[in-house]
Every structure is written in C-alpha cells, then in structure tokens.
Image 1 (cartoon, each protein chain N blue to C red):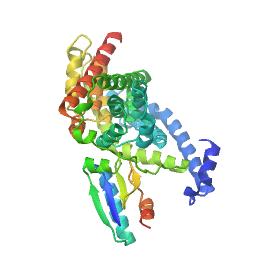
Image 2: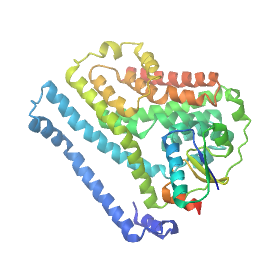
Image 3: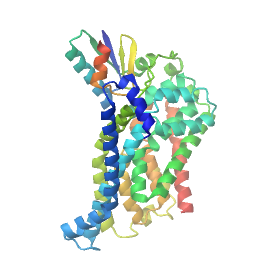
Image 4: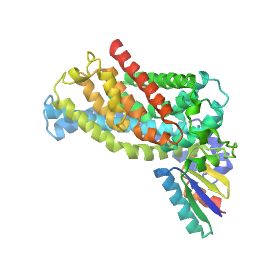
Length: 76
Length: 359
C-alpha cells in the first residue's frame, strides 16, 4: 500500500502525516508513507486544498486532518 | 436546529453509531449551553465591577481601577463572543468546501464572479498555507485571474475573528463598515487585476499544467458531524488566539488607564494626511493576527487616533502579509505580486481616507 500525505508543511499537514503513521502502525499493515510538499506534485494529483491523503492513487480526503477512525477505515 | 434535520442525521447510515438518544442529548446540552452563555454574558458588567472594585478593592474612577475594570469586562466578553461565533461559523463552513467553491466559480463571468468569489472567501474553509494549491486549482479550472484574486483577498481579510473583536470592542457599526469595505476592496481589487491582463505573469509551469478533474469524494455530512466541525473550529481557533486576545486587551487596558487623552491625535489623527499611507506601509511586514491588534487599536481610538487610519492599519496587517507574498511567489512572477500589493494597498488607503472624511 502506498500512502501519500499532500501538504506544503503547516501544522495541519504534519498532524495528518502523524495520524497516518500511527494508524498504519496500529493496523500492522505494510505501507509506505510519503510526505509530498512540492506544489507541482500536489497539483498533479488534482488536489488543491491541503492536507490531503492519497492511497494507491486514490484521493481519500482533502482539506482536513482525517480522524483516526476515518484513516483506519481506509486501510481495510 | 430543526427537528427534521436531526431526524435525517439519525436515519443516515453513516452515523450508525449515533443513535437517536445520544443525538438528542447532544442537542439538549447544546441548548442548555446556549442559555447559560446568554445569562452569563448579561452579567459580565456586574461581574467585572465586582472583581475590580469589591474583590480587588480598587477605587472606581482611579487609573488602575478603570484599567482593571476594562480588562475584567472586555476579556471574558470577547472570549465568549469568539467562542459562540467561531462555533457558528465552523458549522456554517461545513456546508462549503474549496472544491464546491471552485465548481460555483468556474464558468462565471467576471464582475459577477468577483462578487461571488469575495463572498465565498468568507465562508470557504481553507488553511492559509493552502493558498498556493488553491490558486493553482482555481486557475487551472479556468476561473479568471481577477476572480481568483477576489477570493484570495477576501478570505484572510474578512474573517470571523476580526469581526467578533471589532463588534465586541468597537460596536456593530464599525464591524459592519469593516465587513462592507473589506468585501468591496476584494471585489474591486480583483476586478482591476483582471482588467490588467496579467495572465502571463503567472509562473509558466502553472499555466502549462493540465489538471484532470479528479474524483474527489464529495462528503455528505450529518448534522451531528457538522456540529462536530463547529467544536473543532473552537478548539482550533479559540485555542490559538485566546492568548493574543488577553495580551491585546491587557495592553489596551494599560493605554486606557495611563495614556493621556488626545495623545494619538498628532500622529494618527484626522488632520495628519500621511498617517493613512504610513499605517498601510507599517502594516505590510507586520504579521499579527486580528485578535491581538484590535484591542490595541480600540484603545488608540480612545486617545484621538482617527477611525479611517486605524482601519487601514488593521486591514493592511491582516490582508497584506509578507509570509503570504513569499509563498505566492512560487506561482506568481514578481510583477504580479507587486501589482497585487499595489492594488490592494491603494484600496485600503482609499478606505482609510474615506472614513477619515465622513466620520
């Protein structure tokens, strides 16, 4: 599983990344987590409100920090 | 809230764990909280008087006494107003997303688009560091540059924290003036930038970018979730700005009690023509939030500063921030940034002079 957290690097983006890391660890799934902060890369995903989470190329959420329960749901 | 909405939220399968009783209990606690809020709010004046003059034994009319009364009254008042309004705006914003706003603005003519963009700037939630992705998203969707700017100017300038503080400390008239002129600047400045045909001053990689409309999930929220958004907004915003409110009011209280009347008249008074441009220039590099600046501004008004000058200063601090310019440089060429600062700055100055003349 390939998880990308998109965001230039403000507090909210860091929070989103942290939540994804915690959730992956807790669920015990094999996944790579990448933080994407380059604007060009973010735009290429068609995302324009950050933070956003993309899993295996699919946009899961935009413009907010996901809740833990929500993030857990995406891993299944 | 209406009962049928509540019903909807319960039926919605997404909210399966929230059964009817728990939602009802939430609504009841909310109403009880609101009632408590109002009864407490009405008592603030008496409470402040009690704290300053009975508990601390200060003399009414003395310098320290007046400063403390001001502090004990205004701090809880502003914090309470802030909590209520931020909560309400948080719930309201759950109806708007940048994706929806983009859909509304795409395909709108200029002028109508400028007005809509400025209005949507108030209610669309977006984190200030999203300015660049949002800019790209708007421009690649074919939204005219000027319309995009109307949004980007209005979003930070007309914000609920500034409005609450203006209302709480300076009254509804000043808050309404700020809201009206802030929107007007966003509309006219955006429209002007659109007229100047500066599209080629957007960085090339943005213009060459073809973003395919992506399958971003459009969320359907239940009422319970929307109220949760309100709560999150309070935690997020009030949790961050309360300290600036307290510090700002403390400084304001000091000015109230100790700075002589008319002290500011010679520097920021109506008769000083250069004070408006000076206020705008000083405001650009200052990156303070509205929470800290309004209480100080209010105290200065009491000492002879002119309202127009003070409003211009506030708008410049909030709407033209250096960090935002630095971040926008990634998508805009320097010339366009200069035009942006110039047009908005002139708009703010005109507002400043206008108020100094009519009030």
